[in-house]
Length: 248
Image (cartoon, rainbow, N blue to C red; front, top):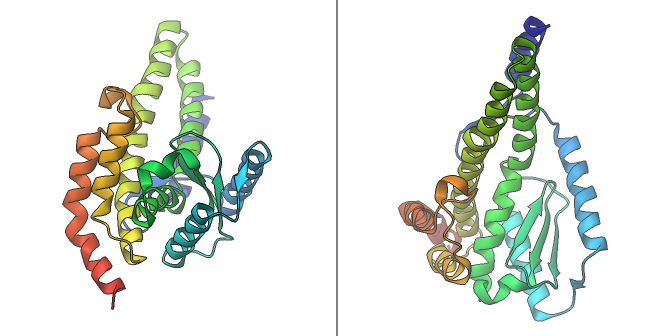
């Protein structure tokens, strides 16, 4: 039994290797593009069914314009959709297949088109890099590993330790890695679309001031504010090259 599971995991891993465009990072994904996009559309429709979508306003039009500009340079043929949802949450998301929602609560922090490009570029980058599919694939692999562990020992304490290690030692670091990767890819995307990447520093500083919780970085799925801003500043020279080219 355990030998079969080991073989299954090995074959699954070898068959599911992918590469993130723009960073070259290897990733483990077992889900097809079609499955991922179907889940994205289903989830998007569920969100919209219980949300108040704002249309016809200057803010809604700006969200759509910035989104279209970013999509033009995303390098994928998605059926893009950009909506503004009336909600005080300071949040935005992009589901697989290019389904993007911005919550009205983040508009005062975004302030303008450049600020919107920062947050929307970041969220679009998550979808382009298939971070959601990668997370689900990682979870599936961990569940398979749990079956192996259960087959090789009956020590309940070890199983408990495995669950803790899975949550704190494996999954969260990947989430922080995803966030940093989305920061980088989103920065390049907004610059290519003609939005000033230097405004990303200002945006994340405003985000930090608006809702810093003081959560230790190790137990957070996001990089610390200082690390995030430092990383963005490190990549600004590269982003500025794209930004300069976009103006010619």
